[in-house]
Amino acid sequence: MTVLYIALGLFLLALVLFWQSGRQRREAGLPGGRVIYTDTRTWGPVEKPLYFAELGLTGKPDYLVERKDRIIPVEVKSGHAPEAPYDSHIFQLASYCLLVDKTYGKRPPYGIIHYTNRDFAVDYTPELESNLLDLLIEMRRDEYRSSVPRSHEDVARCARCGFQTACDQRLV
Ligand code: SF4
Image 1: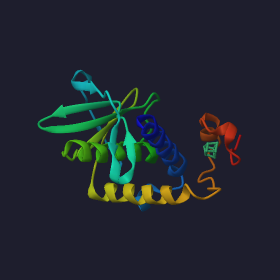
Image 2: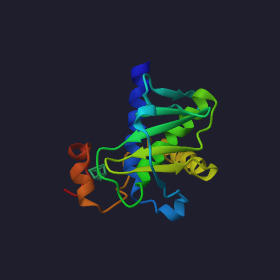
Image 3: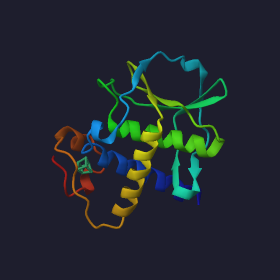
Image 4: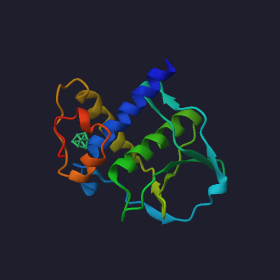
């Protein structure tokens, strides 16, 4: 069963990546993220995926930081930081914030996206949570559609995409 939950979580995250580019940050009301300094010595790896049955949502943040009775999820990205975090990264982090809230009963005020050269704190606002829940509902609905249109014109993204060989809408 655990494997099923992990697979479902990975599938949902893949769909988030697929969805993200067509969404305008301002329309979605996404927070931009603020640059912060982080002390990586306080980061603790996460042993098991977090799971919230009501939404069938599972995910495993790279790290959790316990600080002043708060639990802050950290998502580590291998590339250099963009000007502001990508929408897909923000939604992924928001899903971890939601999972931390539901698992530990402590709502994270923000999460951290760690790029190789810079860290961003992204506030987990009620608006971001609402956008995430809307997105999850849309994704669930689209699971039953035979085809979901590509949401971007980014050739480079398709070139990096792990679904490229199976995708009939790839740009490369
Ligand atoms: S190949 Fe391109 S269009 Fe297809 S899923 Fe990947 S990023 Fe999206």
